[in-house]
Length: 378
Image (cartoon, rainbow, N blue to C red; front, side, top):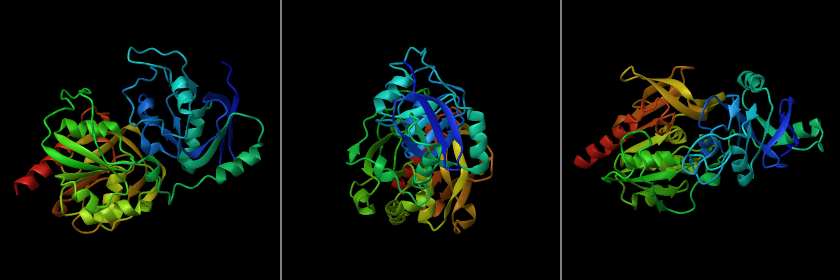
């Protein structure tokens, strides 16, 4: 297949030339971000937290082990597009069902290859994540495309949860998979957990199930009354895309649930938990996205190698009395975890289910279970 010429145009006026990949002729727009992981491109592009974003992969060779049916974090590609130095057309892995190129074509997602991603990431690190457009034609001028990029909605103030959440309440039916932990997702279910779907990843559901949780998933707009009517032992607040401060219903629901039963939040869920107690969040310059971010557990002193994907963070200086900073990102000192002991609630700004360590952070699921055990025994 002969690729069309492609352009990546940033809102700051920079233009990068390359070749079209994925669905040919598709115009892709969104916030341009970068991910430093060497593997996991399939999990990245199907992670609902990337909704509204175009992902630049810093590893130069993407797609070499193909795509399979099981390593997806949702039912479709969530990223608005991808940028790579080179997309591999040769696939070599016994689990692969198709190539990344074919997967992008089937999903109607476009992208660009042949870009100097090192230069691009240096721009994003110095000037911040920015809006962009990818086109596979020469019809529009560079100036017109810069204007197009600047017309893309800013991520600040944007609630994207409605685009990725479930439409209906459902019971999570995860397949019997060990996923390298030595335990099965079909462990005996001892606790009823309601997971609020702000853009939940499938492997989170697997880890909850592996730790004995019977999980019912509810839409992002669920109220505290909706959740309590299901009589859960605990509530999980999921990851998701967009500006946490804009998820007003999720914040209100969390505020109403605090102190009534154990709460555990990951990423957007962690931010919503902090907002529910009166803290504030802010947009990071270029965010944290990768599989090797070091985090210090402030209670134990242990260092965890974590997987992260977020563009906003909790302002630790705004946390009220009674809220403890439990984890700190060692790259930049940002808040990576909080606990509210008197409300039996906690959250972390990274993905313990993604196993980059590989098992450094799985204890967080055990802590959630222990909280439910303690409250149930009281």
